[in-house]
Structure formats: structure tokens, C-alpha cells
Length: 537
Image 1: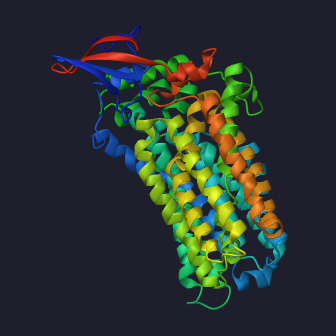
Image 2: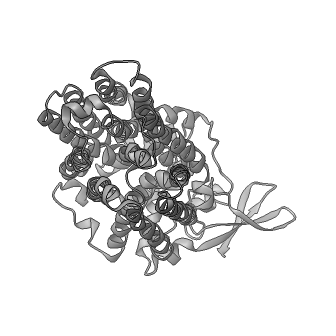
Image 3: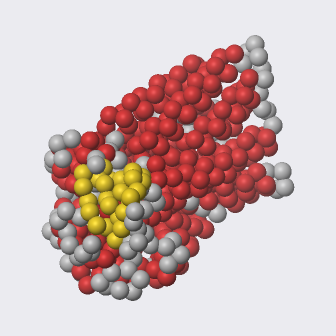
């Protein structure tokens, strides 16, 4: 195969995709891959995960992942802190509706920050966007940890909410745009899994000091530790390269080529993967696109394909939030309803969530590129629906069978593992993939806005609903989980095995879902290690 030839031969990003072997004859093997250029290319050119370029890329990605860890701190810190008597004595969060308000005020900050996040990542670049966002998060964390009055806590949580939502469009875009296309699914999935790094540190810190210390230090210290991942980012971001796609959008093509050469091409600018990426970026990324105009959001809705993209982004946010009550905030309340009265035991049950979900995420990312996004999302949602059904049954019968309360909690943990196995990686990966470059940062910011509006409703309503309606409140989540399976089947495209730019082609087709599932047969000469023919499957 002439690797410089375009036309019929398609390449794609499907390695971990493990193409299906359909037949073998002598030295020829027929492999079935996604209908794309990168898919065909990678049938014979899978890069090593331990190559020189990849080893140079991992530390950079590790720093970017700290942005996700920063969000993980608050996701669990506040839930544990709000159950502590010292915290409740100072801020009066013992009443369900008041607890919901203080948890949700953070999400109001998210809403404000959503309107700044996208233009910031587009205008200043992905790196400087991360810098500004992390500075805001540090400021909010310090105010929150030092708060003595309710209004000070509210100010700190609003600022923290503004900064945390600003992290996503910059860091998430950076991660998906600089990742090697052969490992994009696993890398971006792991990015979101790093949320649990912060969550584990914060929840286990709370659990460890609750009886070992006296006074308010048992909630102030965990809240102060939210600054740690931000400090790491602010210390090392200056040594990271800029996103090559952002550079291309600014007409700085040589700089983009140099970065791809170093981190994707093993030091060779003529490397096939580098040339293919450069060719596709030239075709897809505009130097005068709407990403240069902070007020212009038209690319999110201007065509049927773009509206389909945003619909998928909003669906991911909705189904990922309205799956269960936000257990990271309200596990102590759920445990209390199940008959657990010890504060320390409630904190232990809260702390167990993050290790379970991180384990699920680490195991799940390995299969994202193999099995594909659609089947894994549907499978995960099916298991989650069953778990919610069991929670409903156990909660309904708990009055006459007290032991079923803990059985219901056990199914919550099974739910969390199944959710984290697929939905946690895909929450960051899927929206980043389906959005085109010119709309990616603003689209992710709007995704943050939507996600946090839904989370606001769920966070504020859940404690009141659980308190007043009991087990019947969980029927809402069962309906949503089942609905999600139907929507994924009929509306979600398959992004496995395609470069970011090739995903654009799916949405240009009149039937995007069918186009995304289209396959092609690649005939490989196993003796020479080259593609000799490509045909429709």
C-alpha cells in the first residue's frame, strides 16, 4: 500500500478496536474495521503504548488529568462535610432542604462559569484556559475552607463552582486534541476517571480524621486540600505543549506539525500518522471559524448535523445525572434511611463509593475502543436499570424486612460500578468526540451548563424527595435509565475507530447512526504487513 495515497484507502483511530478477522487465506487476512481512513491504517501500523513518543506524552496528560481530580474533591468533600455535627452547627445544614441549597449553590456557580469557559479556552488557548480556571478554583477553595459565616461559605462555593466548570472546556479539549488517535478512548476515559483521585483523597481524609480530631478542622482540612491538584497544574502547565488543533486554528501550522512529530510521529515529520492528521486538520479546522468570536454560538445549531451533535451532548449530560440521586452528596442520608445511625459508618459508606467507581473506570476504559461506545453504554444502562429496580423493591419492603435496607445499599454500589465502567469515561469522551473543533470548547461549556442545571434540580430535589416520598422517589430514576437505553439505540452514533476529523463525516450523512455503524473489509498481507485491498463490508 502506498501510505501517501488517499482516495479509496481509509485510515482510522481504531487500534484498541481490535478489528474482526472475517477470513484467512494463505498470507492474506481479511479484517473488518470501521469505514474510515484511520481504521484501515491502524490494521498494520498499531503504535506501541510504550513507544518513545507515547512515554513523552504520558506526563503531559497526567498534568491535564489533575483538572479532573480537582473536580473530584468537591464532588465528595461537601457530601461528607455536610453530615458532620461541627459543620451542621455552624451552617445549619441539618434540614434536608437547607442541605440541598448549600450543595446546589455550587452548581449556580457552574452556570455562571459556563458562559466564560468556552470563549476562554478558544481565545487564550487550552493551556492558559487551564491556568485561569485553576486560579479561580484555588480562590474558591480558600474562601470555603476559611468560612465562618453562612454567607462566606456561599461566596466560596459560588466561586469554586465558577472555576470548576471552567476546567472542562480547556482541559477536556486539550486532552482529546493532543491524545494519540490510537488510544484516544482510553486516555480521555481515564481523564474523567481521575475525578476519583480527588474524591478518594477527600472522602478517606474525612473518614480518617472524624474521630481523630476535635472541632472544625475535620471539615476545614478536607476542603482546603481541594487546592492540591490545582497547584500541580499551575506548577507544570508551563512545560506542556499547546493543543496542535488550537495552533492550526490560529494559522500556526509549523508549530502544530512539530508537536505531532514529537508526540505522535516518533520524531519524524513524514510519519504516516502525522501526515494524515495534518491533512485532516487542514481540511476541517478553519482559521476564521466561530471559535474566534466569543459571542458566536451558531456552529452549535447551524445545521441538522450540528443539532444532532448537541442533542447527543445534552443526552449524555442528562442520563449521566438523572440516573440516581447524587450519592456523593447524599449517601449519608440514604444510609440513615437504611438504618445506619453511626456518623462514622455513614462516612465509611460514603468513602467506599470512590474506590469502587475508580476501579470500575480503570477496568472500563480498556474496553471503550474495543467494544465501542454504543454497545457499552446500552449494556451499562441495562445493569443500572436492574439495580435501581432492586433498590425500589428493597426500599418498599424495608418496613417489614429491615435487613433489606442494606441489600438496597449493596445494589447502589453495584450500580456505581456499572455506571463508572462506561458512563464515567464516556461523560468526557463522547461529547468531546462528537463536537467539531470550531464548536468544541463552547459546546463543552454549554454541556457544563446543561449538566449542572440538571444536577441543580437533582441535588436540590433528591433529599426532599427521599425524605417525603421514600422508595417511590426512586421510580423516577428507573424510568430515566430505561429511557436512556432506547435513546442510545436509536440516536447515538458510534465514534470508535475514527479520528476526530473523520467523525465530522458521520454528521454530514443523512443517516448519521447508520453511517457510523458502516464497516469495511481490509485485506492484509500478513507476510509483508501491508494492506493490499479495501472494500465495503
